[in-house]
Image 1 (cartoon, helix red, strand yellow):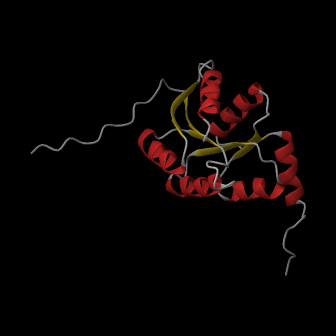
Image 2 (spheres, rainbow, N blue to C red):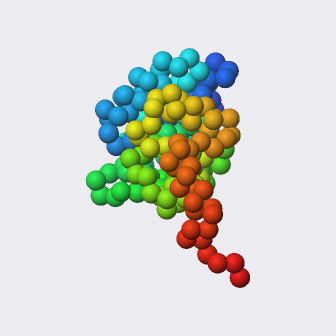
Image 3 (tube, rainbow, N blue to C red):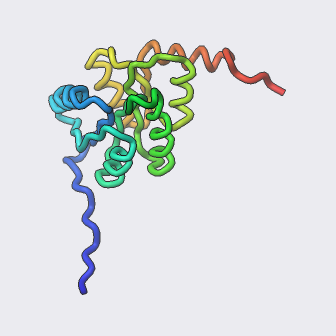
Length: 164
């Protein structure tokens, strides 16, 4: 019996950012794909609608960026936070960028603690979204202005534990 080694994930041309889309709404994923497909340096390598699908997709395709929503089902508003943590643990170098409708200081901070390198709200301009994807792919952080303000407020001690 001959054992064939697993094939390496096909890589796009050098410099191309490989993206996995994770959102429970197919129409949103399709819209994002159509926007991102217009960018010569961005390639959508797969889509997932649940955390289980996302984990399998990332294991199989090894994207550079996972663009994920926090709400992945009707049953939980923040199931994406757990997924963010699992992906971050399993794939330490992956760029996790949250794209969600929720703008809440605690959620932004929790997403960062779960491994997200960026957080943008879904009403962000497409140019800003593409900028955020490219920034995260370079290892930088990326926050839209409202999310960044939430992080700054949190870092300035609002809600932070007192020093001992």
